[in-house]
Length: 151
Image 1 (spheres, rainbow, N blue to C red):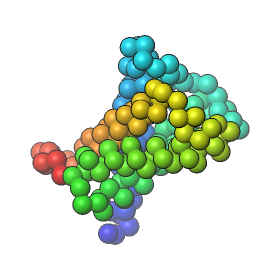
Image 2: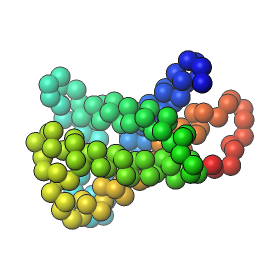
Image 3: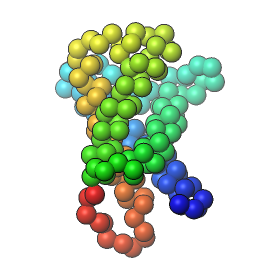
C-alpha cells in the first residue's frame, strides 16, 4: 500500500467514524430515548474538559480515530466487510470503553454493568459499526462507479 492509499484509507475511515457517530450512534440513542427505553443526552453541546470543546465535536474526533483503526483492521479480517465493521465496533470499541475509557474518566468498569446499558451499548455500537461500513464503502467507491457487492 503506497502512502497515498494509506492516507485515503485513514481519511475515509476518519470521516466514516465521525459521520456514523452523528447519524447512527446518536440517532440510535435518540430513538431509544424517545421510546422510553433509555435516557441519553444526544448531540450534546456541553463543553468538555479541559478545552471546552462541545461534547458532540469531541466525540466526533474520537470516533473518527476509531474509524481510522477500523479501516485498517477490518480490511485484514476474513469476514464480510459489513460484519467486520459491526464486530469491530461491538466488541473492540465496547470493551475498550468499558475497561479503559470509563475507569480513566472516574466511572465504574463497564458503567457498573447495569441494565439496560449492558445490552444497549453494544447494540448501539453495532449500529454505529454498520454506519461506518456504509459510509466508508461509499467513500472508497471510485467516482461514477456502481456499488459493488457487499463483501
